[in-house]
Length: 486
Image: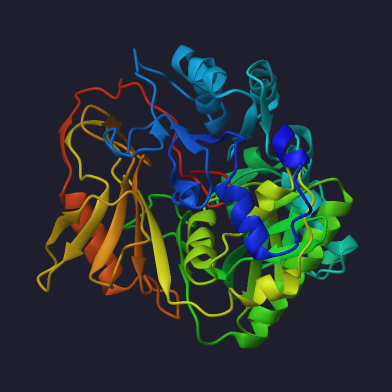
């Protein structure tokens, strides 16, 4: 990193490209899989991945997966990452590389301690700040400070249905409510309360928490990833959420993918862009810099755009953001994230960079979870790579690509394997991810027939043996949310 400090100020994209091509600072993405920033290593010298799952059977030239011994019961992504940072092979690799930058999706104070021991600087804001911003209550307040409107809401506590009704009545929210607790993902801490019976179903989850209570609206949910920098905020393409389809996830309302598409929603796209820029600038004032994910809601009755929540991290939306900004704009947005954490001065016309990402093709991703409530030992799993589907809905692996950039048409999809032969699959387990051209969701939020065919075909490639008792060791479900996982 000392070498970077002696460089001249970067004042053009050519300067930035050259800076990363010549980079001598080791940059490591450490996470259960390489999914979030897969392909970023094409642009950056000395970029490497360290993962828990071996998605490529050792064939990816930039991925290290330490040898495994024994079983583990991880409760979070942080647990996985801390395990990796304690692993002797990982520690030896990082020490051999020397001081560098560590990029993660999720981490905690223990991760920060382990990284410091290994001479690694985490290229993200501190865990304490991220935790603070991650609260849905804090999100709403930050949005208010930035002049960004959230869906009609109020905040407070309610120990009974009567108290909840009183909160809602005071804010003129009506009786059909959406109630959220401060922390949570994949719809698991969002509750739809219309009657006292609904309240009683979730009372134990709500009665002790600070609540955000919202009027229920007809809406299109979406997300956008952005990077807050010293010179302003860059915003990736608008993505709509794919949620709750039983073919893909067992969780009602659970996130299971995204669409990136052009055409339509012109007014809403502009509103989302401005909202993300305002929010990023406000976050920078709080001390937060770099990548964040902003959820939004488009009211389908009024077409008004509201702030949803902030996810202060590289996220599940990152892969499509990376694909669009790299392939169509020729300038991965994560370069600007890394510049914020590297010892180099830079300043270019961010408005000109933003315009590069205005035109692109349609792409989609699906996160495939195991929907059956049983535990099985996987005996065969589909390989990572590019698969092709024929007119009869049958698929075959056509080439073992190491990322999705070479998917050529809607009859092809890149599959990233998570669980493989010898692993256990269980209710909600993240089996793998599909990335394809075209859309997997219709305008009226239905899963397309093509998407259903791909999910069915990939699932058919698995073979497994049921266990008599659900006593299998279970690793962390990795893809609970676009904003926390991968």
